[in-house]
Amino acid sequence: MEGSVPVYFGAKNILDFAPNEKAVINVADFNTVKELADYLIYLNSNDTAYEEHLAWKYDRSTWSDRYLQTINLGRQDGHCRLAMYLAGLYTNPLKRTGRRY
Image (tube, rainbow, N blue to C red; front, top):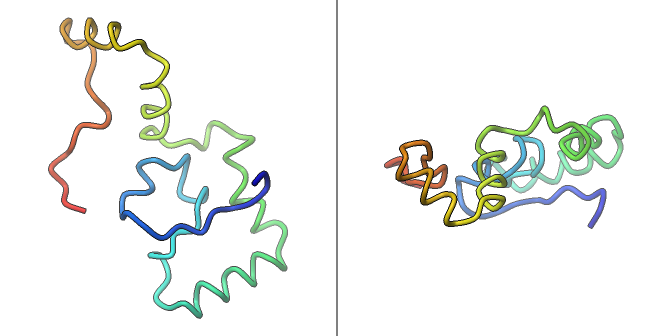
């Protein structure tokens, strides 16, 4: 929904795919459910803090490099990516880095 901030519970690498660290409220960032609930109540009563979570929609300069690589991946035709790869000009931004999640 427009104007909402997702509360996310899932893969630990969510920030690799989010525009920035404030684009989602990651459940993993909180030690207890009460801390999460207190934060959500705080956001409900503080428009400035809530708007910080939506700023990425209006200010692309806040987008992470990883997010930009991911969205740009879909803008190139597969044949173009292959040609760039063969020419040594392309590296896959989604390639595993050896990190375990």
